[in-house]
Amino acid sequence: MAHPSSALAPAPAPAPVPGHTFSGTLGHHLARRLVEIGVSDVFSVPGDFNLTLLDHLIDEPELNLIGCCNELNAGYAADGYARAKGVGACVVTFTVGGLSVLNAIAGAYSENLPIICIVGGPNSNDYGTNRILHHTTGLPDFTQELRCFQTVTCAQAVVNNLDDAHEQIDTAISTALKESKPAYISISCNLSGIPHPTFSREPVPFFLAPKVSNYLGLEAAVEATAEFLNKAVKPVIIGGPKLRVAKAQKAFIELADASGYPIAVMPSGKGLVPEHHPHFIGTYWGAASTSFCAEIVESADAYVFVGPIFNDYSSVGYSLLIKKEKSIIVQPNRVTIGNGLSLGWVFMADFLSALAKKLKKNSTALENYRRIFVPPGMPLMREKDEPLRVNVLFKHIQNMLGGDSAVIAETGDSWFNCQKLCLPENCGYEFQMQYGSIGWSVGATLGYAQAARDKRVIACIGDGSFQVTAQDISTMIRCGQRTIIFLINNGGYTIEVEIHDGPYNVIKNWDYTGLVNAIHNGEGKCWTAKVRTEDELTAAIATVTGEQKDSLCFIEIFAHKDDTSKELLEWGSRVSAANS
Ligand code: TPP
Image (cartoon, rainbow, N blue to C red; front, side, top):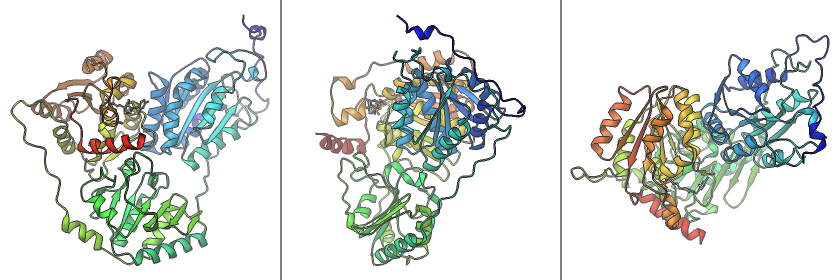
């Protein structure tokens, strides 16, 4: 039986404050704030708790509301968008939507991406009552969704009254921007359209105070590091994923140029270190590194890791041959020198720029690298009509890349194959290495392509991952995107096969192009092809870059189930050992 109080009509919404005819509304304020921080596209799924709010977002001329097929993809799209534009936003409905988007928000948290995750919440008059609401687990407790979000967001605002709504919204948004993490904002479904004097028609702009290093700590860290590095014979610098959150890419180059040291990138930092830089020596990923890169890093007598995350994957099952006492670890707000000094409130960009001015030039390691380096070979010549090999596919993808492209690599062997692509200047690169949630790339591609309209996205997605989130190809077509998707159909979860095999790693084969054609259904521009040989691949690439250059292009590649990268084999066996 329904709780008796559920039969009661909700109390009327608070009346507008008299004498404030120019007051804005909460919905208008939120819409303007999103525009102000750089969001032009909001990814959403409607539900009765958020409909009025969506009306206000649509009313904002500088916002474009993009309806997604499900909340998980809306969250992934906001993640991809934030990677290209610095911040993203999604809007979902209470609990059924909130819990569905949660995994995407957790992913964004792990990758340090500010996403404003807005949930249409219960009527403000229902708070404090014993009512049971639909779309919940049937308990008169409205905090379940909030509690789930607490561990995957840096700020939570439950807006169920207008008096402090302005403050709550602004605090949540500015905390997300400052901390580069997602924020959760729940807006009571009856409040969006009500004017309130705290909301002016044009909100006063945010001011986010710049972070300034503790001068004394900065000086001490630079002095100690310069002394340490100026004694080294063969130092190297390795960039990691936190270069993004620290906004220190320019300072990283300053240091590379001034010091003369070779520069490498951690796998999770790919795309953040320029690969056309003359000092670039490749990816440092232990046994799965670019050849000659691990040898140079591991034989160095000092290494500067800038923004690293050492997890079981990036350390190849904790098998990196590096020593703490030879390392300088530079994190976004802390520097640690060998086994000794560790100084906080020292910001990465300030530190790298100041260090660049103190280091003696040393090109010994770079010269050694150039002396011994042998460029990688080409894939074996094919037999006539031989089935397409994955290494041949990636040779062709390499040739497609330019400064106006961006690569999105899904979790799976695409991690390893894409990692080996040499990125030309300005070519974007994204993957989700810390969280590694399969299916991420479909939503992220949607969001990234929407934010970076000047780039053509090339997404490499395994069949297993695609099965998780395929629906939002629909939204890509609806948005007129011209992404090229390479779907690698190898019939299974190959990366898992190489860690630990079993019958659970074989997946049901789908007609993937048939699925995409059905989604296309004659509306919008979409082109698909099945590719089994190199000749078919060459023809497909000519079409997608020629007559179908403005279409969403989906190329299904048939690959042998055991056609893996060499790096996956190496990495898989070490990760497997670490797991057992
Ligand atoms: N569920 C989620 C949401 N994320 C995960 N990372 C996993 C399960 C475990 N997992 C990691 S990779 C993978 C699975 C199941 C298989 C990926 O298969 P596919 O996309 O076909 O790529 P391939 O390994 O064949 O290159």
